Amino acid sequence: MRVMVLGSGGREHAIAWALSRSPIGAEVIVAPGNGGTIGSFGSAELDVCDASSVLKSAKELGIDLVIPGPEAPLVAGVADRLMDQGILVLGPEKKGAMLEGSKAFAKSFMEENGILTSPFDVCGDLKSCKAALESRTPPYVIKADGLASGKGVLITSDVDEAADYCSKMLDGQLFGDAGRRVVIENHLNGFEITALALLDGSDGALLPLSHDYKRALDGDRGPNTGGMGAYAPVPWDSEELRERIREEVLTPTINGLRKRGITYRGILYMGLMIDPEGKIWVLEYNVRMGDPETQAIMPIIGDDWLKLCHGAANGELQVKDIQTNGKSALGIVLASEGYPFSPRVGHPIEGTWPFDDGSSLVFHSGTALVNGKLVSSGGRVLTVVGIGDSIETARINAYKRMASVALPGGFHRGDIGSPTTEVGGSPRS
Ligand code: GLY
Image (cartoon, rainbow, N blue to C red):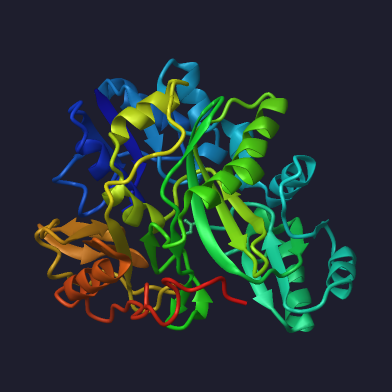
């Protein structure tokens, strides 16, 4: 079997690595890939959001299954085009991808299907934004409706800053058309978890539950990022919690999709908040795996990942839960100086070899090979993942490995999975 993973991040590196471990023995191509995937897997030059370019490569390479890593190709309708040509895709069609492509659509969908989500307003002009802000108490949560590369959310207690942000989104200054509609919602307190599920069009199977760290700096300070670290499974990943996620979120979502005539075969990302009373709120849907959650989840999957992906894309998943190998994993992201605003790239990276040293792995994101040398080429450069029998052992192994990686100006958080903050803790208020 030939599988093509679309993308060039750490998530795609981890997906490709997990696919390549299947006893089925697939040839894995990461397109366009990065400095870590080139050499370990096949590669192809293409534009992931250009359906013609993806289709051409898939045909030339005789691809049996395409797995888009990021959301943008799915929202752009790349899966629709591939499926029309009879190519198997693990990822929803454009209308299913609207769960991530429009926050207003996602919130209405949740409301329609009885899925608990924070009360919200969708605003298309400044007057309605101001009214929505005035009707709420701070902190205010303001989101761009469309795709904004993970940067479209502001949480602030300053009403003037909130109104200014709305105004800049509405006139297209911040995110172009993606910000011309604004979602304003009530702020929620609690503990966030990421629940990923593999859907085959009629059913879904949960992956191990994970937790990621969105702020740039220790203690959850600094600007929001794509994610600075993650661990899996969360210590309170229990059958009871999984059953509640299935009943309260996953099943109503699958039923809601079916009611709208959407056959969703792919990954569903459910960003959940467990509040101090134990209620499960849906913060957001994404239509792809999380980054860096995937880097922490793939090493603890006990089942054959390729068989699962192929089964889901084919409409024949036949499992309720995806089994783990009993291990825990914790990933720490190494970022370039200046990330997330203006990352400085082109610096040499040392210490990434070997990829797997027995207790840790190094998944590449913003890396490139220039004249045979590995250099930084993006904001998030790589994720070091420690593996262990517990989150604590995984954390020790990850930080030990990170100490041997060098990137001039690079930084990482020092408190991923720290026992004093997250692991073993009850929901924060
Ligand atoms: N780590 C958050 C995300 O992938 O959306």
